[in-house]
Image (cartoon, rainbow over all chains, first blue to last red; front, side):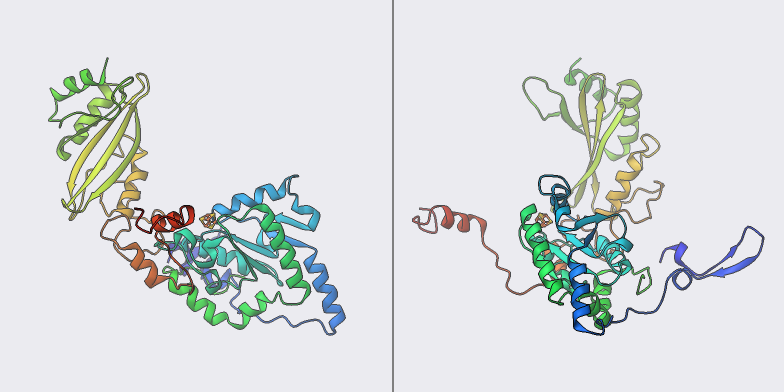
Length: 213
Length: 186
Ligand code: SF4
C-alpha cells in the first residue's frame, strides 16, 4: 500500500495533531445499492427515452480503439447529432467505452472511474480485445473478458471497429436503454461481491477502497 | 573522420571487441562494439568528453538465455558528426548487476528502472531503482526474461471466453487465398 494511503498522524497548520485514515476519511464505504425503477411504467419509459437521447461518454481511452472516437467528435461522423457527447469527468458521464485492450494497471483506474459515474450508467466494450483478449490473448498484462470486471451492456466487435460501427453501436445502445434493459449499474450493485472478487484476482496491489464512490 | 578511425583511436585506450558495422555502404553511421563491463564507465566518459558523444539514445537489454548472459546495449549519439555508436556489455544472467551510469546521463536512470523491472537487472545506487516502474503489484519473475512463460501466465491469471478459435496463419491464409492448392502448398 502506498504511504499516502496509510493511517497516520498529521499536524495541521494551526499546530493541532490529528489522525488521518485516508481509505475511511476520504471515501464512502457504503456499497452500491440497486436503484428501483420509477413508480409507474410510463414515467420510467419517459426517463429511459431521456437517457437514451443524452448519452454522455467519459473521455477515457484505454487502448488503440480510443483513436476511433476522435473522428466521431468532428464533422465527418459527428456523433453530437445523436445526442452523444464526450465529457471530461466521470461525474458528468453515463457511458464508459472501454476502447480496446485493458491492462491490469488501467483496469484499476477504469474501475475507479466507473464507480464514480452516476447511475444509471452503461458500459460498451469496443474491439475484440475486450471480448476475448483479441491479439493480446497471450499477454501477461491485459485482461481477456471485460464482463468479468464491469457490467457490459454491449460489445462492438472488430479490430479496430470503424466509427460507423460505433455509431451503429450507439443506436443499439439506445434501443437497449429504451427497452429498459440497460441495467448495468444495478447488476453491478447486485453482484458486487462477485465483481470485487474477480477484480481483486487480477489486481494484486489493491490500494483503494472497495467502492470508490 | 570515419567510424573506423574513431574505433582505432579508442581501441588504443580500451580493450574493445571487434567493430560491427551495421550499415555498410554510403553513410556508415551506426556501429557496435563490445566492451568489458569493468571498462564501460571509463569508455563512455572518454567518448562523451573527448569524442563528442553527447547523447544517450537508449539503454536496452537482450536476454541470451542459452548462454546465461544478458547483453546491455548503450547507444550513444554524436550530434555534430551525426553518427551512433552502440556499446555492448555482456553480464552474467544470474544475480545480474551492472554499474549505474545515471551520473553520466541522468536519462539512464529511467532506462535502468525499466531494466530492473522487466529483466531483473540491478543497478545499485540508481535513483528510485527500487520503485515500481510500469507494472503494479507484479509477483512473478520479470516478464521480459525469456524463461517467463507469458502464455501460461495469461491462461492462469485471466479467465477465457469459450469459443475462441486459433488458426495457424500460414495454412489459414493459404486456404483463404489459394483454396485449390493442397494444404502443404505443393
Ligand atoms: S481490438 Fe485491435 S484495435 Fe482494438 S485495442 Fe485490441 S488490438 Fe487494438
